Length: 126
Image 1 (cartoon, rainbow, N blue to C red):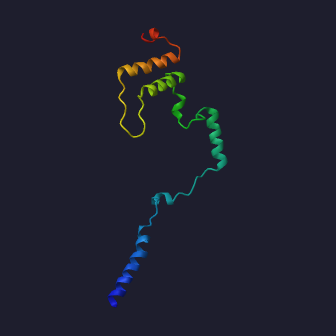
Image 2 (cartoon, rainbow, N blue to C red):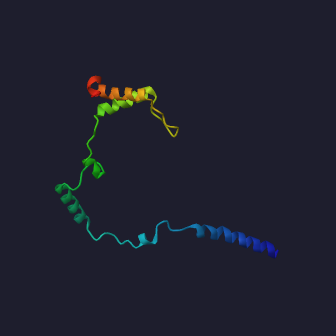
Image 3 (cartoon, rainbow, N blue to C red):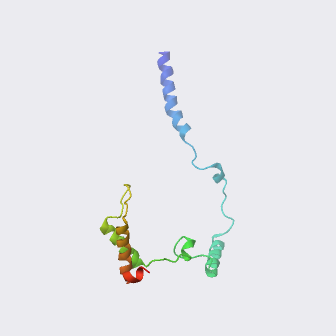
């Protein structure tokens, strides 16, 4: 009887103590001491407005690098190249192996893009 009582007590202790031992705080201790900003909401808004007027912040995209980015190809050219690549089966889907594009397929894709923007084959080869 005493062994049964000890085993039951050990089992109950394991059931109630183990979940409490596994429960931990997910954030490091350094984050717990954060007290908040010293600036008011109005001060932050005023700073943001001043930065926008000074041209220090770009609106729209989240990346600052987009302001300096200049596309090298027109949208119509890229779309035509994509359509040609799809037609040739040169686009991989999912997690499967990549597609190896032959030089003839690459040239066909390039020419489809040039045709979309109105360049002729003779002027493109220069």
